[in-house]
Length: 88
Image 1 (cartoon, helix red, strand yellow):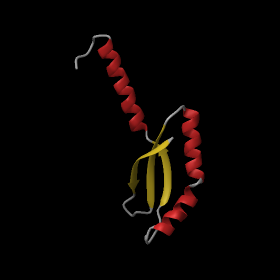
Image 2 (cartoon, rainbow, N blue to C red):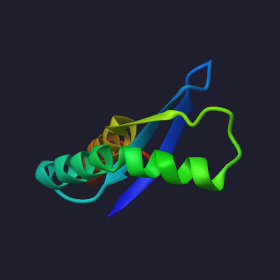
Image 3 (cartoon, one colour):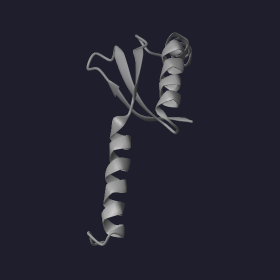
Image 4 (cartoon, rainbow, N blue to C red):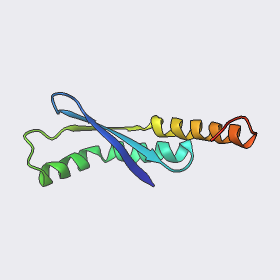
């Protein structure tokens, strides 16, 4: 499962940086990124067909580490609460 978590455009709108989140292990995440990167030209062509844009942006994909970091912090805080080291 892959979810788009954010899209950031360069100021000139020529490049779309797409952050994704995946479920599973690192190998599955890497496979999802590889698949999206290999499909980037197809996706870009489809965007050009569906949207009236002067220039269709180049699509770049990366794993969203912010969500992973937030999960890690949440897990650490839960561990503290369970040991009695934190308050609600």
